[in-house]
Amino acid sequence: GAVVSQHPSRVICKSGTSVKIECRSLDFQATTMFWYRQFPKQSLMLMATSNEGSKATYEQGVEKDKFLINHASLTLSTLTVTSAHPEDSSFYICSADTMGTGGGYTFGSGTRLTVV
Amino acid sequence: AQSVTQLDSQVPVFEEAPVELRCNYSSSVSVYLFWYVQYPNQGLQLLLKYLSGSTLVKGINGFEAEFNKSQTSFHLRKPSVHISDTAEYFCAVISSTGGSYIPTFGRGTSLIVHP
Image (spheres, rainbow over the protein chains, first blue to last red):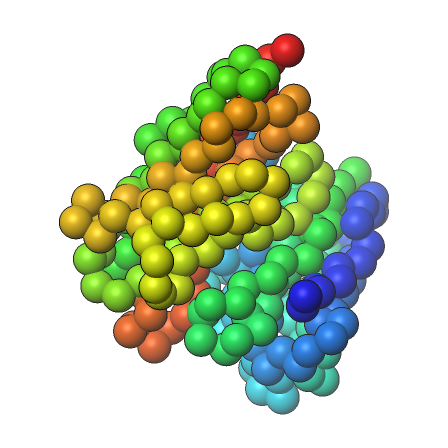
């Protein structure tokens, strides 16, 4: 089946530094990928939709200058948390729709970001 | 806008007992329905999905769910749970006619299986 690979699984960084999270579609091409944030004991919050070759679409309230998304190829989308602060500590998950019509959502394994 | 309600935030159950996790959604238009499981510090794994056809859907790990259009529900069931089923379960809905194929998630139900 379709696999979305996400790296790293865990990262600890210092306040003020930047962290890049990668999301790759291993056996299919993903023109669109999605980035979610999950707080402890809560559901997933859609942050942005990443579109190959064009700008990402951010959800209301998500700072586009802080959460930089790049989708340079059909198999790779990256999320960079810039000038990280402790409140950015969270679980970040990417996903892609293998069917393109909503029926084939596949998620990455997630990245636990801790900012100290 | 679509909304998804998982009424139970936690469901404790003993091993080998049956379990039902409830999910209701707001809209009665054509929908795709999903159940995902999430183990600690991991991403979401698809348990099962309803896109069309038979309303009784069988998934992995012995889970099944039934799409009830009149009640706008998609409850998840398992006849006999194991300790290893302890996890967070998310119901998700996509309106298949809306043009925006982005799922709406419920808040999740924590299934806790006791020995």
